[in-house]
Image: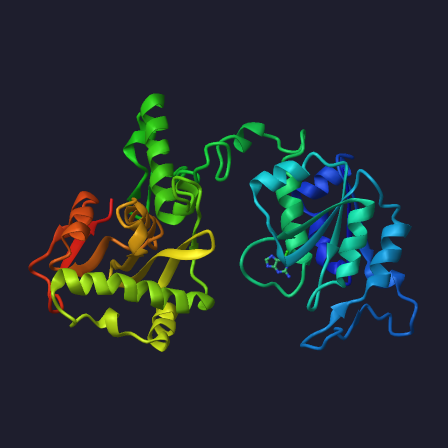
Length: 384
Ligand code: 6GU
């Protein structure tokens, strides 16, 4: 595999000489080329960026150096150009496996506010293009991301790993689970013991223990891997964005009018909230919504309260109540509770018989010992 890096910081790629990629390069498995993008500038200052058309903060990387570099490097059909950018597709193990099949990958590392869009549009006409992001955070530049992608891809090349078996049982491997905890000698360290089962010599029991640990760990740390956030029909449950506030307010009023009738009271704070109130609580709560044909038809929110995950505002549009959407929202918000939550907590109207049946079925129990607002009851459920 041939790897090219286009960057204004070639020194970032020093680590490629080290460790495994270095050995692979030495053995001929990898052919690595790092290029200073300023090679393809022609002014005295070797300028690679300029101000954005249309105004705005920051600088944009100019198109010409990239264009000349693609030409000078003979990039063409069959090659893959990876642009590393926080606005790219999320890089994952599946993508690493795909990239590991390529003959040549060229990494174009963005800095500043990004690369002139025409570079990417042009690149698509000469090669395969992937715009990749490592995750939902912003790095100063794409160099570290290009290194991370390189390391994930290169270790998958046949002949790269001394022990190919270690590729099978690992986090993000075929099982779809995170890896189980591992231990080595000594048996006792600082008063901590290795779990007995691992010393039992019983391979069946060991495999079962590891599978169980992997499941628990995944459920706690990465519930999204176990429960893709979708309803039975594939409709996604997604995080609310600030622009959802107005529709949330409308849905909330519709739901809490029903709640007021069921409980024969107007003394329900959620019934009287304003748009500003909704905007304010959305900043504090992890809020999720469901849209059908563009319309916001369901929502739920969660927040840590001590060790408990406080669940609330499970809302379903009146015409969809009884369809199972409420239960799906309840299941979802439990699945996305932070790892440190040890129980779930929720409040519901004392007279809301249908809701109380759903909560009961889902494993929630009345807690008469805990304080509740007027006309409401508190329910809790331990986390497994
Ligand atoms: Cl690929 N680039 C930058 N600049 N920031 C990132 C990233 C990439 N992935 C996550 N954050």
